[in-house]
Structures are given as structure tokens and as C-alpha cells.
Image (tube, rainbow, N blue to C red; front, side):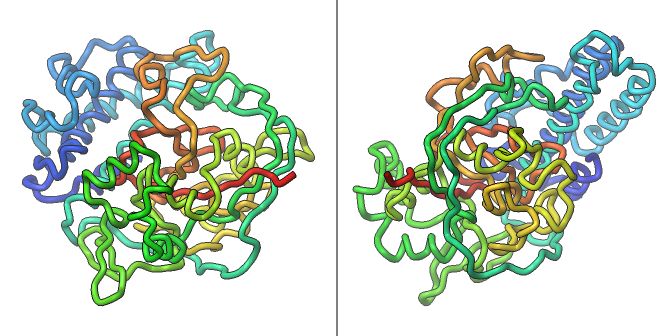
Length: 416
């Protein structure tokens, strides 16, 4: 975990303290923030240790200062930030040795507080990668090998009508917004076997999809016109060929990969153009992890085993999505593939509480975001760590966001 955070901030100080986009914090802010969060929850809340650096709490409180304003904060410089997080981690290991993981405290039970800070840091590692992409600086992000794609196969898989258990009461590190488990009854539907690929999305562009108001919501159309959006973020066209900028390198868009860096508005417009729609998050979760024969939910589409390199593209194995069809062994019970890893997938759902929701351990993680402002994303991207991914995991963001590693797949209702 810590190796990733340090690797993504192994750069010149000027790059670390600079704000590369008003959407993102300076990289060094993220680095010290994960240490401060770890201090707050493990050392102070779980361990009862006297605060190490209480004077920096406000600087690293994500709710006190919006990202666009964080460059003005007196945050720790790169060297001091590294010393701070190292000091916190040393004390955390001491707390781990003496905390009763089977005691009555819900913060301690099953190591929840440690899962909380582990997942939090991994989520910021993904944020750091998004910042490095926006920086446009080459040579900062490692590459890696991925399995080949698998052309062919059905375009859609069928999910029959029936009840399934959405969310969880049992996964020890699940967040409050994933709880409690709730029975949901869905009619039958079809969902794409694979995420929408770059070739299919390029066809939408070439067919005038960005210029046809019929495919866009009123808010999406206004956003597209106001911002002059004509393609996914980081795409440009040169001599009839689409290119993309990826971590400081310009390359032809690989047409056999899932499309990424598209907003919810773009995903929704594509789905309409294709004669389909975005799946609800309930449809997405059932297609991903519900084992109808066993009558239970799986932790991952393929079962309970950890997400190895033959099952999913997670944990920055390479700095890009894998080719379509690369993970047949990771298919869900219904035959949907690449539902975990590669790209976060937009759903049609607003981020709302499940019936019986209870905020834990603090309402600012989930509760303050509920409503009709954020759309739900599912599945995890190539940049997400396996520790922070499962069939029940819920991500959310504004429908205009494109700098994150987002894509989508489509669904359609069952024809009667």
C-alpha cells in the first residue's frame, strides 16, 4: 500500500507542490493527507494515542478546503510529508499489536479501522494517478503487461427476473453505504457482456452523436455545448486517426480497449444512440455477483478467491485498461466479463442510502453525499487496488467528471 503512495510521489518537488488541475489537490497534499487520516483513526480513535501533529488537522481535512483552494494551504513539503507519514506508520504497527480485533468495539472488530485506512490510502493512490495523468509529464508512471483480448462472443448476456440480495451484512471492511443487505426484486434484462470499447465509441462520434441533441439529457446537452466537448477527455484526431494522451505520451487510441475518461452525460448519450440505456446499480450488482443457483452473492464475479492477474485488471498491473475479452476466467455467473477492474462503470442511479442505512464511523464518508447530485459508479478501474474493490462497492461522482478512469456498459429491458 505505502509503496504505491511513495512511488507516485517520487518526483521533483516542483511537480509535487504544483496544482495540475483545479479538480485535484497537489500530490504532496494527498501524501500527507493519508498519513493524517491514519493518525486520526488508528492512533487517536482506535489506539487512544496523544495527537502527533494536531496543528495540521485542518490543513488535511478534506471537507474544510475544496481542492481548488488547497494550493494556498500551508501544507507540509515533500520531505516533511514523508517523515510525517513514516512516523505515523511506525506507531500504527504498535497499535496493531495490542488492539483486540475480536472485542466489542465496531471500530476494532475484524480489523475494521485498519481496513478503513488501507482502503482510504488506495483510493488516494488512484487519485494520485489521475493527477499524474493530468500533469502530462512523461516517465512518472510505470507500464506493465496485460493478457491479450478475445474477439467474438455474444454482445449481451441475459439476467432473468427475480430477487437478489444487494449490499452486504457480512464483508468486514465494507463501508456504511454498502449496508445493510437488502432484497431487491428486478424484472429480467440484458446487459453488455463487456464494457463499451473504443471502436464502438468512435463509431458514436463519427455518426454525429455529439451533435445530435436527441441523445442527450437537457443538462448534458448544455454541458456539452458550454464546454465544447466532442470526444473523450485526452482524445484528439489527427489525419483521420484518433490519438490519446496517456501519462505524457501520445499514441493511437487502441480500438480493442474499453473507453475511459468519459462523463456520465457522454455514457448516457452513447447508450441512447445505441438504442439501450445505462444499467441501474441494482442491475449492475446482480449481473456482477449474484449466484442464482447458490442463492447468494459472490464477493467477486468469479467467486471468493482473490483477484489474481488471470481474473481482473486491478492494482496498476499496467497503466491502461486491458483489451476486451482478456479475462474469461473472471466472468460473472451470468457471463458478464470485466465487471471488476479496467474502468469504473457509470450506472443510471443516484447515490442514495439503502433502507436501514446507519452512518459509521462518520457521516462525512457517505451520508453527506446522498441525494440527486452524484451518480453511482461500480466495478473499480485498472488503478484501483483489490483491497478496495468488491461486487458491493459503491463509488460516486458528479455526472460531468471525466478525469477519473471511467467507462461504462449498456443494458436494455427484457422484451416481452
